[in-house]
Image (cartoon, rainbow, N blue to C red; front, top):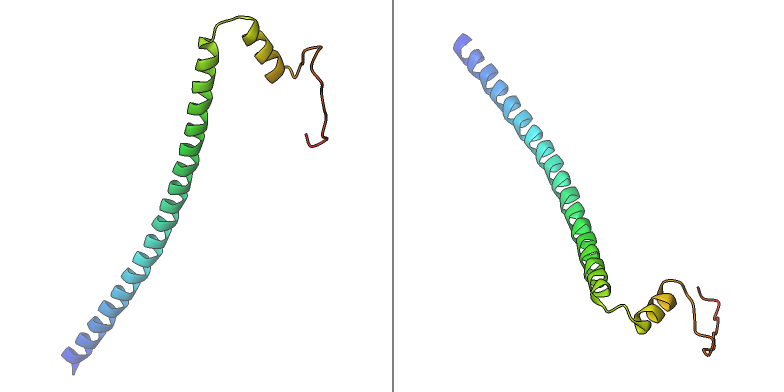
Length: 96
């Protein structure tokens, strides 16, 4: 009966060890999955910002490549400084 008792105790110990191993594995897997999702979201956000910056760089490079003539000065004055020519009519819609 002594050998059988040790066998049962060992069997219970093995079952408890297996259950603990599975529980720890599940917790670690869930934690890693959450970190993976966070990193994936961050990558998507950074890719979006990278595309925005690339478009901005292309626009600025185009503007720098334009000739510095009267048409360019007028366009910049209208776009950046919100100015208009004396002959132009200005309408305000109140949406801005």
